Length: 444
Image (tube, rainbow, N blue to C red; front, top):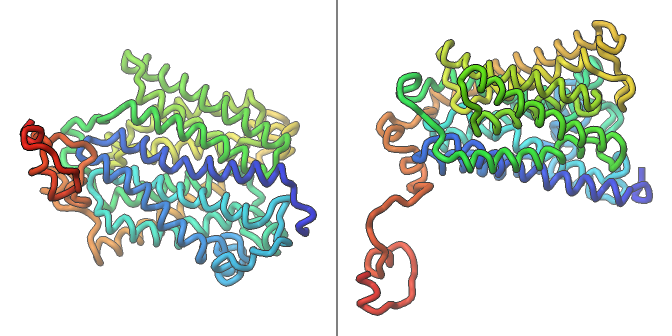
C-alpha cells in the first residue's frame, strides 16, 4: 500500500484508541493504588508509571521489531527490521489503511499496560529498583515473544509472523492470551519467588482508598473501548461490535460479582463492583469480535462469577497475589479465551462457529492449546527471571522497611501528608521556595 491508500477516518480512530489505551496505565495505577494500604500507595502508582518510561523506550528501540519484524521460525521477530522505527517513517509504510507508525504507537500502549499489570501481585514488598530491572527483562523475554506469536500475522507488517496467529490460527482479538493470561501467569511466578507480605492471612490489609479504586476502574473501562474497538484498526462494523461487547461484558460481570458477594457475604461491595468491571473487560478482550452481544453478556457473567470465586484460592493455597492479578487477569483471560470455543458466532466478523453454533471441538482445542502455551511459557520464564534477580540484586525490601511503609524506604516520599507540624516560613524553606511572609503570619 501507499500513502494514497491511507484512510483519514481509520487513522484518526486508531490514534484516538491509542491514546485511550495509554490512559489505561494511569487508570491501572489508581486502581492498584487505592487497593493497597496508605503507606504503599505512592510506590504502587510509581510501579505503573515507571513502566510507561521503561517499555516506551524499549518499544521504540527494539520492541516493535521483535514483535512485528520478519519472524524467525514463528518464535520472534527480527530485531533489526524496525529498530528505532526509522524503517516505517516513509509515507508509503501503510497497513490496512493506516500508517504503520500509527499502528506502532497503538501497540506500544498494549505493551506498556501488559507489563504494568504484573505489579499488582507484588504490592507492598518489592524493591523499586528490582521492579525496574524486572520490567525490562519481562518485556524483552516474555511479552515481546508472546505478542509476536499472537499479534503478528503473515503478510501484514512483515512476510512471516508468529505461530499462534498463523499455524494454530487461534482467535485472540485484542490480547486475552498475549496480555492477560501472560501477565497473570507471570504474576503468579513472581509472587511465589517474592513470598507473602508480612502478616499475610493474619493481619487485615484493607484497601485504603476505595474512591480511588472506582476512579481507576472507570478509567480502565473507558480506555478499554480503545483497547478492543481500536483493535479493528478501522472505523467499521468490527469496531462497532467490539465496542458494544466491551459495554455488555463488564456490565454483566459487575452485576455477577456483586451478586456472588451478596449471596456469599451478605453485602455487595464497591471493591467487588470495580473488580467485576475489570474481570468482564478481561474476559471479553479475546472474544470482542467473535461473539454476539448476548455472548458477551454470557462471558461477562462467567468472568464475574469465576474471578469472584477464584480470588479466595490465594488464601487456601498460601500464595500472596496482593491485588488479585491471578484471580482476575489469568482466570478471566482463560474464561474469555476458552469461551470462544463455545460462543463464537459465525455471523460476526471472524466467521468462526463455536460448539453452541454448530461448530466442532477443533476451535475449542485450538483456544485451549494457545492459552496453555502462553501460560506455561510465561510462568517458567518469569520464574527464572525472578530467581536470577533474587540472587543478583535481591527482590524484596527489608522487613523493617515493609512494616514502616515502602513509600518512605523506596522513594523518600509519602502519598499523603499526615504531619502535624504547621506550615511556616521557617519549617518549609528548606524544602520549597516561598515568598517572604510577615513574622506574625509565619507563627500561625
